[in-house]
Amino acid sequence: MERVRNQMDAYNKVINKADLAYQDKVFDQAIDAYEEAKLIRPEEVYPVEMIRKIRQYMEDHAMVDLVSTPLIIKADSEQKFTFKAIEMRLRKNNYIIIKARKTGETEPKVYLNYGIDGQKSGGIVLRSIKSQETGDYMVRVSIQDRWYRLDNNWISVYSEGGEVEVSRMQISQGD
Image (cartoon, rainbow, N blue to C red; front, side, top):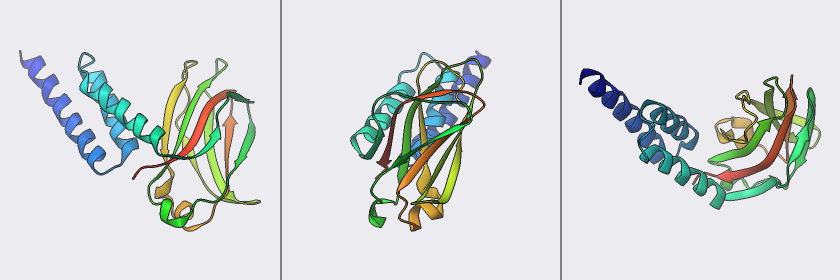
C-alpha cells in the first residue's frame, strides 16, 4: 500500500511538472516529463495522449520542411540544409523536430548547427541516438539568442562516431 502511494505521489509530481511546461508552451520539457511519468506508471494513458497531442501540434505548426525522405548521414560527416530565413516575429518559440535512428551498433553523438550563408551562428548537441528504431527528437532552438536575432538560413546535422538515418526534419513554431 505504501509503495503504491509513493508511486502515485511521484507520478502526480511529474505530471504536474509536465502540465506546467505544457501550459508555458515549453514543449520539449513537457515531453521529457510526460516520458518520465510513463516510466513511473506505464498503464496510464494521459502521458501518452499528451505526448501525441504535442507532436501533432508541432506537425500542424511546421514552418519549414528540411527533410521529407529518409537520408543517411555517414559517421563523422555533416549534411547541410538551406532554407529561406524565418521572419523575426516568427522565431519566438521555434523547435527543430527530427525523426532519426542509428543504423549501426555504435551510438552516434549528433550535433545540430545553424548559421547564415558560410558562417556558423550556433549549435546544439542532440541527445545520443541509442535505438535502431526511429525516434522523435525535439530541440527548442529559439532559446539561443543567435537563432532569434540573426537571419539564419541553414541547419546542418553532424554525426560523430556512427551513422544516422534522418527520415524527417522540420522547423516548427511553438505558439
